[in-house]
Length: 173
Image (cartoon, rainbow, N blue to C red; front, side, top):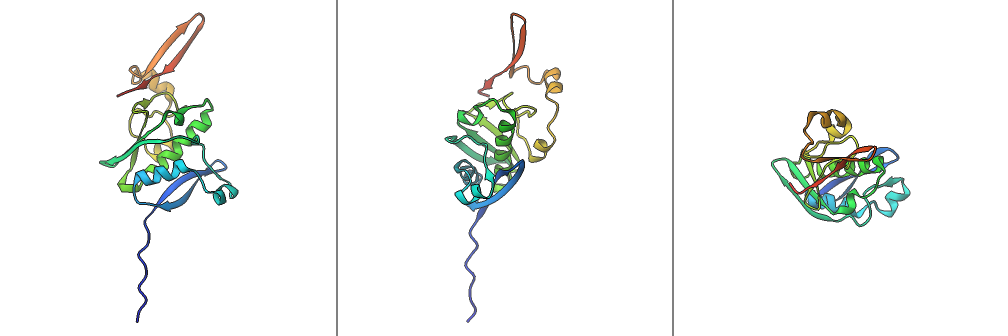
């Protein structure tokens, strides 16, 4: 009698970092929600020993993950955007976009934090709309975006004394 192979278990790719490079591991699952949950759970002990790490803050929780018309909408808790290190913020954004792209046919990712768009939180990256992996590899010039007026509803110009700066606004829209 012929041996019957067991059906292959569905797996999703989860993206972390190894040094400064993106690194992929697989986890059980088939949906964007399962992939993001695996990302937020972090690398395994064996992966950590092998140099795999995450910049997603421990305790970041998913509020919702959906895919519609090729766009994965990932809504995370506020903890995701806390911190001032621009490299760390961009690394965690890359981990989420890479991980949520692919499952259920997602080709773009719309990131939300506490239900709002985190404008101005990721240096050099404009996340007001859905973004792609390719965009993260070649981000546009933020100053050009500011000068264009595209961000006028999302960036607050604050002046005080001799200091002027741009303040990001967490939009609920």
